[in-house]
Every structure is written in structure tokens, then in C-alpha cells.
Image (cartoon, rainbow, N blue to C red):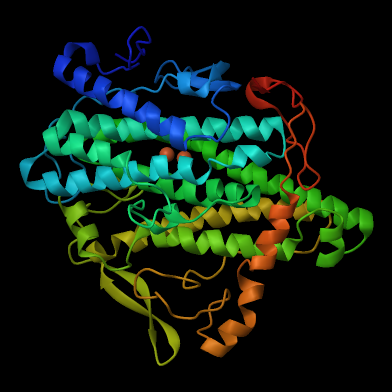
Length: 475
Ligand SMILES: [Fe+2]
Ligand SMILES: [Fe+2]
């Protein structure tokens, strides 16, 4: 079952041909998916031959096959990790029961909502990124963008499979609706805020894949603990794909920093104007982009106190990050967790029941992981002898969701007046001028081995190919 059957119309390792009704339903959805891809997938790139990896097996180490593929011909399919014999529900009030192979009736609506919300982010990011290919800084980067895009498309397949197989008619309707919403659309937007923001330039793209795909990782890790076994198995396999997306973001930003530091050393200056004139992005501007993407992304974890989060956990649907590695009772009754609020113009800590604070628990795990990568970025600057250091803003900065929503907090965590916010906003968040400057750098560089002025080449190519390999053949 772990080998993927590519002879079928829909590649899969779930024995799809044995369930004719399901196979027919998915084969009916497939052309609608392809129309969506043609309309909303990478702009002007459908005829390119792209050096892409495709899953061939879900076994560790052996799953990737690289070859030139036209994106509409990518073998999107359904891949689940192998079942774990004797797996149980590992948390909540059903702890110790055998893991569910079918949807428990009492949790059906919540489970469907979780799957739809996760599924909606996948096509959303493809839509957000669809114009970026027109301004790629290199062929290498263009290929990485397309790899991320096709895999987000596959993540949509992963969720749609669950909707079709386990939720009957309303599942099929949700699967259609996933192809109808559009990122940023006034009438029919994507479900979550950050997925309706634009990703207008490559600095935003790298920040998005570092921060927002990492949100994806944490959400998937929480769902990989689910007592609903098919959801756990499908999200486990999605996580292996997600790792590459975060690599694209982390190494992308690192290469921007490396290039800027090099020009700072060459010109012996840290003055933003001089650096911009030299065609690179100054470090304070990179910090402002970081502040924006960090704050928008941590909102995705939801309100700091949430009865839904408690319900999802209690009912065994969504666990914590690394649930089974934690040393506690996995029920959490009577335990508390610290969340932030505001009293008398200051941020104050409050203890609340942990079950209600599970969004905050996951957010804090995410923040720790994000900050570790910012440390790795700073080592690029340190190695170049540049004293500037990037920092994560305070988690209360620029929030729109939860008890911190709308409160003016500086990146270093002080509650500030509206006047002070207005005075400093341009130092804290990207201004229209910042975005216009970054946009002005975005020309298309597409000859093998050439890179835009504002970004350093990577240390290594993809799949041990040279950096100047022809990653995309334009047709
Ligand atoms: Fe994804
Ligand atoms: Fe992703």
C-alpha cells in the first residue's frame, strides 16, 4: 500500500480503484481542479517544463523522483502515511480508545470544519503567489516557487480526499467550494485573514514561506495527532512536503541578507539610501517585512482563549504539537496557561484554563521555532561582520485576533498611544515606499546561473544539480 500507483488517473496509495463510487466522485472533481489550476495557478507558466519532484513512495528517504514536468501534467494524487498498528486516540476524553477509522458522528461537524479550514489555505497560497513567476530572481528560485505551488495543490487533494471519502454529500459540496473561493476576493474570500493578503514580491514570498508555511507545519503537526486516523496519516505525509517550503523561505531570506551584507561591506556603509541606490534591500527594511509577516502569521493560530480549541482537543480531533512526546495526562483538566492581556495601559499576564488556551500553546511553540531560524539568519550577518541583528517583534505587536487585537504595542512590547504608533509605524511596518522600492527591484532574471542583484546565489542546487542547471525550460 505504501507504493503509489501511477497507472491510475488519480495516483494514490489508498486503493482508490476498490471504491468505485469514491473514484468516480474524485474523477468528477479532478477536471474542476484542473480548470482552477489553469485559471488561478502560476501565471503564464502552464507550458513550461519544470524540474519538479514527484512523490513515488511514502517510505522515508525514497519518495522523491525528479524530472521535467509541465505543471498541469503534475501527478497530483492521494498519499497517506502507512497506518500505525494499534494506534489509539492519544488525548482528550476519548484517550485510550482505538483511533477512529470512520468519522465519529458526534464530532462530524467540527472535524469537517477543521479539514475545510486547512484545505482552504492550500489553493489560497497558490493564488497569492501566481504572479511571482513573472519577476523571478533566477531559474533556481522560479523552480522552487513552482515546486511549492504544485505541492500546495496536492495538499488540497489531500483534504478533498478526506471530504469525499468520509463526509458524503456535504463533503463533496465543501470540495467544490474550495475551488470557488478566491484569495482577496471581496465577495468570496479565503477563510483566514493572512491568506487574503497579497504576496506581491519575492521578499514577501520568502517571508511567507518561512513564517506562514511554518504555521502550516504547526497546524499539520497538531492534526497529525488527531484521533481520526485518516487525517493523522494524510497530514504526516504533507509534513514531508512542507519542510521544503520552509527551506525555500529560510534560505531565500538568508541569501537576501548575504547579498545586502556583501554590498554593505563593499561600499562600507549601512545607510539605507546608498544601499537602495546600489540595488539591494537595507536591513531595517527587511526587519519591517519580518515584523509584518510574523505578526500576521501568529494571528492564524486564533484567539488566545477559545472554547473551540478546548472542544477540538477534548474530542480528540486536534492535539498539541508533539502531543505524544509530552509528559502529562493528555487531558489537561485543572491545568492553567499564561496568556497576555492589557490592564491600566500595560501588558499583563493572566492564568487561564489550559484547555481554553490551546491556540496560545501552539502559537508559543511556533514562536520558539520561528525565533530559532531568525538566529540562523543573524549568523549570516555575523559571519559577514555586520553588527545589525534581526529580531522577532513582541507577540502583542500588530495583532488583529484575540485579546490583543487592536491594541497599539511597539515591537519591543510597550503599549503605546495612538500618536506614538502613528509616529513610528513607518519604522515598524513596511510603508508604501518600502513596498514600491522592493517592487522596483523585481525584474525577471531567467538565464541559468544568473541571479538578480539583490539576492546571493544558493550554496547548492536542487537534487545535487549545479546552481546553473536549467531548472525550467520555457516553451
Ligand atoms: Fe500546504
Ligand atoms: Fe506549504
